[in-house]
Image 1 (cartoon, one colour):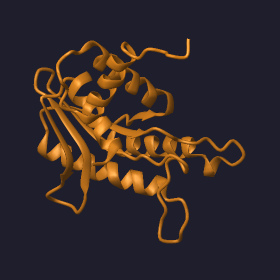
Image 2 (cartoon, rainbow, N blue to C red):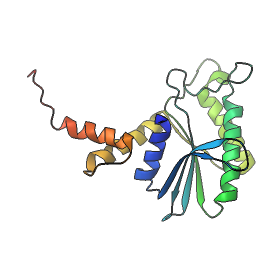
Image 3 (cartoon, rainbow, N blue to C red):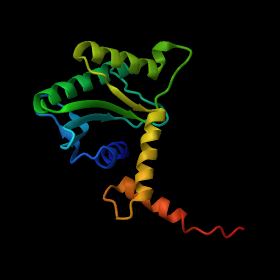
Length: 182
């Protein structure tokens, strides 16, 4: 289980109300996979998501020369995702999302700032495809976790998502824990 992909899948299923959610969708035309795809039949929307969960290094893909390769790696991944979704999901309104809980901002050198690198990727995707890549990073990632927690707090039935079931247990447990130190 990839915990980052599970969080994305849970968000798409429970918050975005997707009818179908697929993790690790292997693409037919090119080598590789899309981390999470969700389809909402009622709204005719498709969510095409990449997820990376690097906690200590933040968003970091290393290339062959052992240097930061975030820009090229993410541009290539989303280019493949966009071309796949355009071919196989032509009638859906598509949302392309990058999910990463920790994206660092190096204030001393712009080139090493992961925030800056994402702005370059967003610009490249927009220039080539006319698509606004949605970034679910740092605060917005945390907001999505809060939405999942709120959902789990209100739901009484056993939730199928391991992420939401864990949050649900925490929420319900907190109502029954007695502080014996008082």
